[in-house]
Image 1: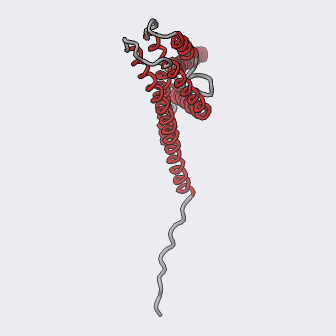
Image 2 (image 1 turned 135 degrees about the vertical axis):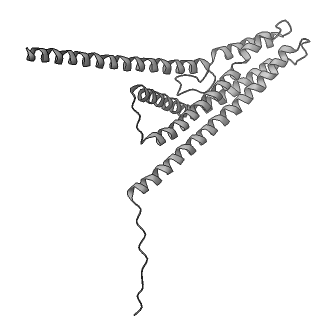
Length: 251
């Protein structure tokens, strides 16, 4: 009689292997989400920045024109064009301000967590890959948002430095009024992307955020040093008490 040998059955996937696949899936999803958000923010900010750049170039042409050969009403036309781009910026900010707030909030919390871990000397070895993935995606979004937000804010307020260089004597009365209104609008408005209206992404805001992080790191470091000093004092007191007790028992 011929015997048929069956090949051993393949082992079933364990729960640990399933969790590894799930972890890899969510890690890839985190990078894709960060990439899409960064591309969306950068494209929106770049398009708005280019519109403001075109207006600034035309204003520089007017300020460099010594003969006054531009057409009447040119300043008013540029003011209205700048106002339209500002309206478009505020409309876009209503959509992306929540995303910007989430990016900066996540970055701040992640920085505080990393500083606390390093100062306390505790860093979980099993969670390092996850922490690296989240850190790269979150900090990458924060850097891209900061760079394009600052560029947009700078170009939107750039006419504030160009308008005073236009020769007032060569302007008509209507153009002079338009110049004053234009200068007031640029100086008194917050133009740019915001974090849910809490602050506008510009250079002073970034300096404030960096200063807050540095101050938090210094405070945590001082708390860690004080904790180590208190522990050493308690240890010295315990050792001294034990020495006294041993001396008394020997006597």
